[in-house]
Length: 336
Image (cartoon, rainbow, N blue to C red):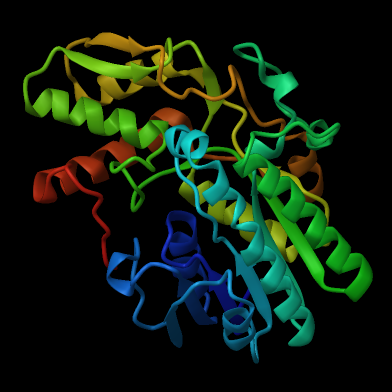
């Protein structure tokens, strides 16, 4: 793994970015951590990072400033959340293209050696995701292009920008297409949370308040695969240290329906089976999505280790503790 390097992590105050910073610090790297949020709202806060900046990386001069005297850059920053946020904030999601573009320009000027871009499974062609329990998406399935509107288009465009900066200017790029990353130290309320966190919160509160019903967006039959955060960080660092420069899936191929995930969380909570109020008018995204891991196994010799039921148990226990301490009316951000 990477050691003793000067590394810039953009989006360090976010969920994946926070876990990445923690791992890179454990490996004795010198970290410059940047996020647009004020520092007190970062998901994790590491005092031993050499520099902290709360600044808007859509501005090119900010990109130039923080990327000076840096070896490697990890761009984990974007304006995103669960499907409810993505479908209702397309223009905001698209503006993240400025972060990647201006950061690449600054990296070229400051002669950065290697650049990582965090893409998403939302970049894949929607026509291949119209049924439940679909075949896993292969990296070639992003084209012909028809990604998730807004957020998915930003990711696909930014992937191409990375490729062309590599071709034209020689910056080594690594691109991960993440598939529904979840785990502790993430958002679990406020509108940006994803399905695992939202469902854990709802079931925790149902048990706490002795309720018999929970709301479920969609009909519960839509399917996804979910990757636990520890596996995500390992896959990310393996990809970064590899010689592979094309986009690659970092995900699980353990595809489940939303109803099946609710069953798992109910078993974890030891609550009686809840009635489900299906909200058919709420955002629900594509019908089915999963990761094909053939390529990542080939080029990285990597596969996920943590099964969904085990990752959900870790997530549920952490969230239950947070809600017991803080409640669940607003998002909480935990310092490390």
